[in-house]
Amino acid sequence: MTGFDALAGRYDELRPAGTAWAELADLTLDMLGPCRRLLDIGCGTGRFAVRAHDRLGGRVWGVDASPEMLEQARRQPGSRAIGWRLGEADPLPFRDGWFDGAHMHLVVHLLPDRTAALGEAARILAADGTMVIATFRLEHITRFYLVPYFPGIERIDMERFPDPAVLAGELEGAGFGQVEVTPFDQQVEIDPDVVLERVRGRYISTLHLLGEEEYRVGLERLEAAMKGRTERVVTTLRWALVRAVR
Image 1: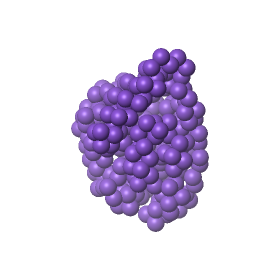
Image 2: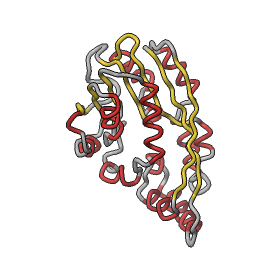
Image 3: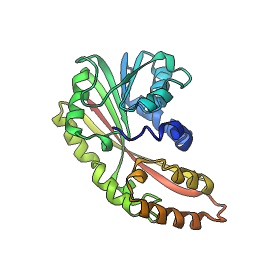
Image 4: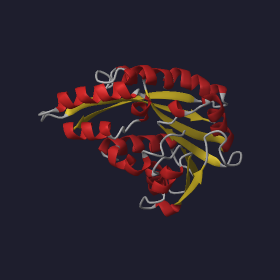
């Protein structure tokens, strides 16, 4: 889970915590249920960890491999209530059975060794501890609104993102018992100038993995398509929320 250092300073600006983010975060927290000790794995700039503490109470920790992301997390309002730790998902820098809740948001596709990382998540959870993973369904990737401009996005992300059914099987193999996959769709509208600003800032990690020529050509196409456009871009986020009980 590296490569986000350069994005850290503008991450919350390019990917703001709007209504859709809050809706997904609150649904995730409902699925986690009461937690005395919760770990946000790959916490990034810390928005979810802070919201979790505000809503659930208890103790919340956030762990991330990027020092720059953690620096931004420590600047969040309410961040002093959170325990921030620098570390990888494998191994996690916590003792066995310490948490009763764990969370990953758009992290599983970044894990170098997903099997080992899921095993680590199981290790740090107590018996009956709950984990919720937010990831995308594969149809989100094939129907992503930027794919017509950057075809390489589909190829790269189909290789990185696990099918939720496969992920569920991997969680069972890591020692989780009850595993449920809940599809969840959100329709969002984005102003054309915001679309361009985000893509110019390479707001998703996949844009950093494209070849420079493909990125340049795709950006030129996108700029031409957005020029003079007044109506918002309408797209759908096709989530899979995977809940697993230790």
